[in-house]
Image (tube, rainbow, N blue to C red; front, side, top):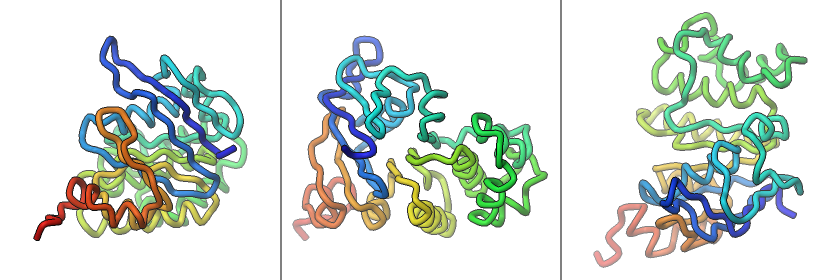
Length: 238
């Protein structure tokens, strides 16, 4: 069984279906990306996996455990960390305090985990006594990822990590995601920059109005005419 298995899931907001007959898998050690237009169901997918929203039908298995009805704090305990769109750091708290909150369920060994985060994000170490709200957008994104890593996840859910960032920070964030995978963390990535996401990922899924319409290796999706036209901004006819 894959590390993450979602099978036949349906998620509704009231009477409005957000995901229908949704099935994906993520193997241990992979980077898998979800592509789709705004409103396609990408964020809903991550919220469903992390326990912030439950499927009305179907199942979600993590490492063989049915987490379909688990609360979000329980999925964190099992090894799933979610970095939401918009970062959601605590702006009035210092960088250190934000990181400490990330390890709330694993208080032992905080210093070692903090050192690992600072090694990954040296600029965050320099800013450790500053309030989170005083960081730049790129630094806040690093802090949000670092906070998620403090929980020692096996699966990291990333929702639009490059949104609103300048090119230099975008490149840095993608290099960091690659390093995180090299350190043994599996990654499920939602990303507006489809080209960079597919260049980084092993496999990808394309969502349209809550349904998976394409699934393949990232290299194949990069060459797919439908993906190139819809998500890479290429004019196939030219």
